[in-house]
Length: 567
Image (cartoon, rainbow, N blue to C red; front, side, top):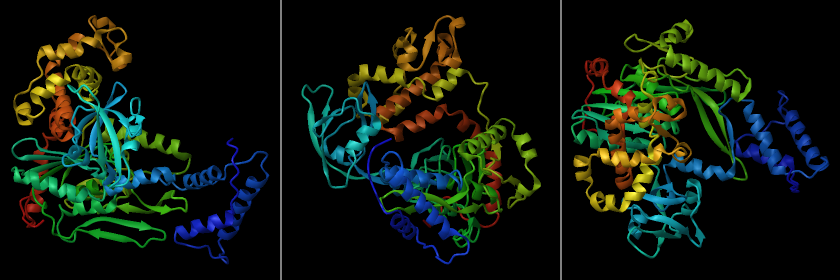
């Protein structure tokens, strides 16, 4: 136990906490709250004064707060002061930094690309630069988080960064003035074909709605007539942004979501009718990592038959949470209400005590059934949790959004194909690129359009990339190994038969092109290439006939189209 004496006056601290939360206990309260508070105060004081060893009062108080919140529900949580700023950055959608994408290669951060117009680009930093020093300390050996922590800081402050550059003998030092760097929540927007747009929503920040509108406007300018909204792995975030996004698709007065709490007044949020996307076919993609605000959007569009929801059942987090700051800068993130979809569905999965482990175990049991046996899962849901959409389709409450079309994981797919899609070959591609980087950058670095149109990974390139994977220790170096004898293959252990890899040369070539595009031009250019490998997206794109029928229902009610100029 850490031997640190930090005597405090517990009563004062507890009442400061009460004030921070916006309430005070009534000393004459008949529910016993004041008596329980005194009990907590007395226990803290006695431990702090009389325990056999000196105690760390901060650790003691934070442990007590964590345990109180764990008694409430699985999602209420204590957030230490040192983590609050990073969390708030993700909600704000920006932070103070130098504006680079980077990855760690051989213990050194390599710049993938500076953000256009960002501080690093203005200072002269280039893609491919290796960051070897930040201020007066070596940056070699730092983790991703370590590099981020040293480069981030208050806007308009300066940081010195020293890099090694290919073809330049001496290190180069840049003094960079930190700026406001966007944390984009909408990414990968592109046209899949002449009429189909694709947008991925990573999370819901304060900037998400504006990002979404901008992305859709760009796609409309390219001729988009129908849209895929990919919210797979979207954990949620700012509820207001989700409501504003759903508003874009719904007619005036249509309910989007409602909330009900104990001390908060019940609220109902309805569409303004001013959305620019109330027509046109829409497919929404979700999976078990889609939660909270992403479930608000999926639930609203499903209940109004406005979009076809495709994928796997969502996580089931239907809780409205507020952040309550504490005096030392830490905070409690606590559930204050539950939200309900337009048809009245509570999306929150049940929690009946038993702790976090029991909650997650029960949740993933139902997620597994909903994914692998969707018909059996639907049949098991009681009538009390069955609801009707605007057109009379049955939808289900009691835990997450059940898609209209379930796309189970393709367990029959070849393990090699799964590995390529999941980018398991990235370490091999990274090593090949490091060995050939100067040549690749000289040929393609300033020729993005030509790269996208003409570059194709040759058989010789792929053979060079895969060669190190045949070594006996390849699995420890690269995470996978290739063997020539099929009897030695162990796909479950990332040991693949070389002939199986050879059969998927086309997939590997697409992966390599995507990887190089990411290194040369960034994620926005690479994402459309990687998406060509996405098996779930390929299946979703076969379902436009059903999505078109839902869109026709809205057109018949006099709504306007994707091209509506009101935005």
